[in-house]
Length: 236
Image (cartoon, rainbow, N blue to C red; front, side):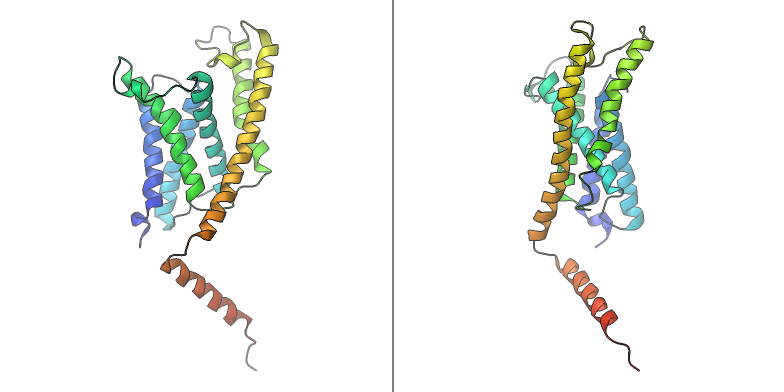
C-alpha cells in the first residue's frame, strides 16, 4: 500500500483545500487573526502533503509545530463562534441572502477547517509528540498578535482597520478594559493549549486500544526479531 492510497494524505489535502477556499472567498485581509491562522494551516498542510509523498509516510512533519497550528485554528473557530457570532447557527446563511460567498468563506475559515484540523490531531499520526511545556511557546503568536495590533494602532492612527476585533478596541472603555479582556482570553488560550496536548495523549490511548493492522503486526514482529538477534551472543 502506497501513501497515495492512505486516507491520511487525502484528509490533509482536504484541510489545505478548505483553508484555501475560505481565504479565496473572503474579502478580509491579513490584519485578521482568522486569515493569518488559516494561512498557517494552508502552508503547514500543503507542506505535510508534500512531505508525506516525498518520504512515503503517513506521519506529518514537525509534530510540535502541528500542535501549534491546531491551537491557532481552534482559537479562530471558538472565538468566532462564541464571541463574534454569539453561538448562532452558521448554516442558514449558506443557502440564501446577498452575502452567501462571505458566509461560505466564514464557514470554511471558522468551522470546516478548525474541525478538520482537530480531527487530524486526534486521529492521525504522529502521536505523543507534544509536550506540556510547548503551551507557553505556542501562545506567543496569538498574544503577540494582540500586542502588535495595539502598538500599530497607537503608532499609525490612520491605519484603515486599527482594531480588527471589538475586544482589542479601547476607544469606548479604555485600555484597562482591553487588558482585562486579554487576561481572560489568555487564561482561555492556556486551557485550550492544555486541551490540545491532552487530545494528543487521548489519541495515543485510543490508537493503543485499536487492533493492529496485519502490516503493522508484521512490522512489529520484524522489529522484535531484529532485537532478539542483536541480543544473541556472538559465536566464538
